[in-house]
Length: 70
Image 1 (cartoon, rainbow, N blue to C red):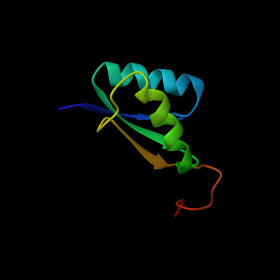
Image 2: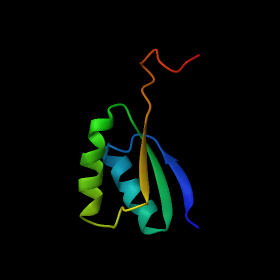
Image 3: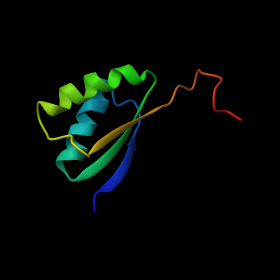
Image 4: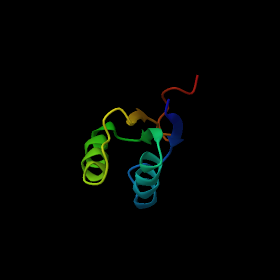
């Protein structure tokens, strides 16, 4: 069973490097994105180094949005 980690800022430079290390070391990642369309960029980048199938998922998290604060 893979250990799951929440990784905020997965689209950034540091976030992508952390994601690569986590996947390489057997973790499953839930990455946060402000814009879900950027998930393809993350997958394309990481897929050049590791198999991401079933090891990364994304959720929308925009702290500047008024949605979801209730």
